[in-house]
Length: 155
Image 1 (cartoon, rainbow, N blue to C red):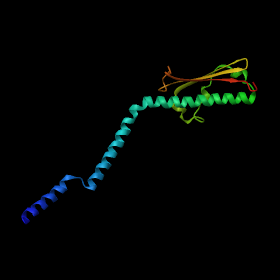
Image 2 (cartoon, rainbow, N blue to C red):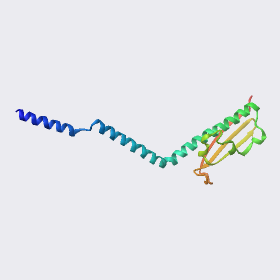
Image 3 (cartoon, rainbow, N blue to C red):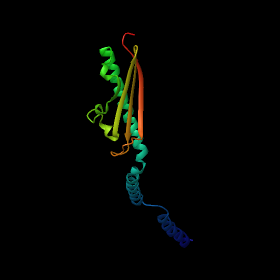
Image 4 (cartoon, helix red, strand yellow):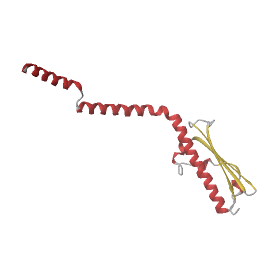
């Protein structure tokens, strides 16, 4: 009987060591996994950038257009009306430089055009952003347009 218990005890100890991982093995495995996972994510991240860049580009364009229309509204409220030179179709691309918009460089080959008209006491303000994916992208496949109506102050 003593012999059988001793055999069982030896088997139990051998079996116990074969069942699991030690803490050191588990930690080493986790470190290797996270290192490989991190490098894999970094390597695969550029493949999803087309849609991501488009989304970021539209966000930048939306913020810049909103800024421009807010500025026009402030000028109308302050001056009472816009100068005649601002009415009609104007190229306002030079207003959107990296000094004011740090992410504007994302919008490759940007072209910004404003369309402002005055009918009676109602201003119709519209700005159109057109940009491409690359610096040499002349056809500018992406665009964003924002428009507002504004009355002269005091009406």
